[in-house]
Length: 90
Image (tube, rainbow, N blue to C red):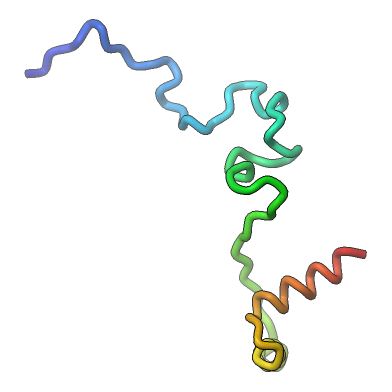
């Protein structure tokens, strides 16, 4: 039962994932931004891909964030995103 099929051969690049760029492919690809990877190009063009961020805060600041989120009826994430966008849009 351990026959080898002469018509079937393993491809030379079979150890590479299909999304792995071939040598020089990153530089020539128009769908990728400089410094991005193939994972960054998946999805809607022009939209930032959400990523997880873990931050250690003083309890008083966390409490203030939660209170502000509740007051504005939005999530803590939305407050943090808004604050970071405001800070770095200058």
